[in-house]
Image 1 (spheres, rainbow, N blue to C red):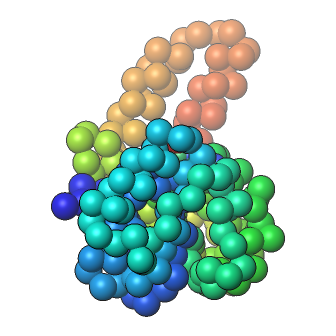
Image 2: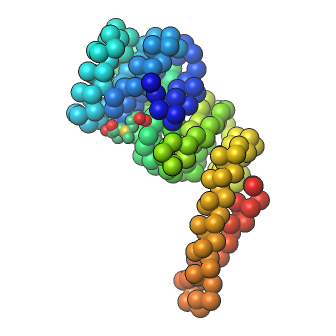
Image 3: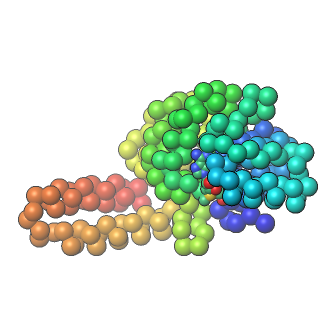
Length: 225
Ligand code: SAM
């Protein structure tokens, strides 16, 4: 059974796609999607030997070797023309690393109609990358697991022009304004306000600049809540 985070990621994968799951580790995501008959072909890509062997043995154990191929390789390198893939998922890494993987393999994205991405941090940088590289976000989810709040998204080829707030909070998440979203940003607000307290009264120019930035951040958050 998938963890709440991966379960929510799996719900973003459109039914019937041919998927590459990059940084698949144990391959739980493609295995689950195939078992639930949502996907009938997937590549589980891994750059590291240990996780690659994990994938391989989990796929074998599940009896799904016919439907899921584990490949060792860096990022999108594991995608081959003959796979006729139309979706890529990348979950459980930083947003900057996800962007770098997409950037390095950009020519492999030409036939890809869906990107399912779950950054652990660096959400803003990832949204920025998508915008600059002609992908638009069509769905976003937020989910809590083990005291961490995870954001995830589905993007398709297309244009978007996100405001600074949409880049930071997520264009769809900030409209849905779920309880978890509000909780996450309230926590960030109180974290920033503690820093603000410490900084105010400090006449150092550097600290004053930092204070200004924190106040701008806090204002952005207050506007969205
Ligand atoms: N995707 C799974 C999940 O969400 O539970 C596993 C996440 S795990 C924390 C990150 C995995 O990404 C590691 O197994 C790591 O080896 C792999 N990884 C990191 N950089 C990669 C790259 N450039 N190409 C392929 N895999 C990569």
